[in-house]
Image (cartoon, rainbow, N blue to C red; front, side, top):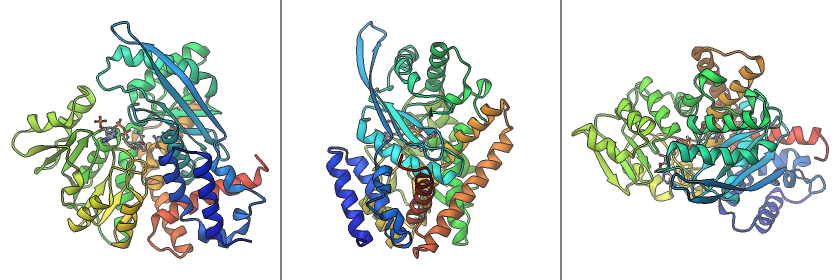
Length: 451
Ligand code: NDP
Ligand code: 2IT
């Protein structure tokens, strides 16, 4: 049998050759492969080329690409591209969000789908992994335009999804409004009340309490668990948060509930720093109600806040950091600035926001680093709880869902922490989360035959 490191190198080279011009997918694959050597050494059947287990994990079960034509308010027709990558269903129906952002291409959707497979395995809730979306840009579009886009998108997507097949949800650019339009069109085309086909629905029509809050809340709870291992609490700490969307807003809310002081929020144009701590009611009004920009927050907040155009929140010294916007938003230089500023823990609310060099720098500096696969799994976990409620035609109280979320985040932290220790990498949550997720999917694939 080959040395595990050589076998992993071969797999990486093969993926890069077979999937050209997909840098985000290559990065996500490499981040996982780089941590698998110890589990290959301990369990040679995972590595055996004759079984091709990892080759199967690296190849999506199905990739769907489709045309999405729609008409704007002036009568002009636009054509976008729609995607759904059904990556792996060994543990349950494909599950994962839809992203509407101009940067979306097949490589971005594959990176997100690949990460989702391991994240969903870590929740322990019987969900496979998938992701989808479009290069449609919702910024500046009217509600009517967004509705027509969503209806056109679902007119193709509906034939590929279902409560037992593939269950999409939100991600960047897709929130409660878009899920509503998508669900309405699915119901109309299929003539079925199939609540479990999408998650992130409104609470009055099949949605779960706490789903909007779940990713941000979970990311803060994960940070609290990492700090507890080090004998610290969030109470009294300062925090930097990037983004100002779904994940960032509820990260800020949970930080404040736990006595921490979040100082920043950002969007693609820059960031705000508020010396008194973020006024969440004002930020929510601007972002959720008015769909405005964070720069407006500084104008309306009075003297304590400033908008730094083009700036990065990581230049603000703080005790804990929550990258909650998008991939590769925190570079090695940013990590250096954060460590100089005294950061103790980093919890990834976004997917792959920290570049590999920055992750290495945090780990070498002894910072507690929670990778997105573990730290932001609260969102998809509550999506799975939404599916459970839909299947039973019941709806749980917010308290019950929040208690379940807290217990799931504790257990994800524990499994990542214990797995890292078992594979001789104590405190390395990247290795722990990757191996724990990998083992669950790999064992299911092996048991189910050549599929
Ligand atoms: P939203 O669309 O609600 O918010 C996204 C935020 O990130 C906005 O402030 C946006 O600013 C900013 N942003 C997006 N792209 C860029 C970019 N290229 N450069 C700088 N800023 C950018 O999305 P979510 O909050 O739902 O998602 C944020 C992250 O969390 C993503 O990585 C997503 O994959 C991840 N995630 C989301 C989950 C969920 O349940 N929603 C679950 C787990 C992870 P602007 O408006 O200027 O574009
Ligand atoms: O990245 C993610 O985990 C999400 N966007 C949420 C997926 C879901 O199905 O709730």
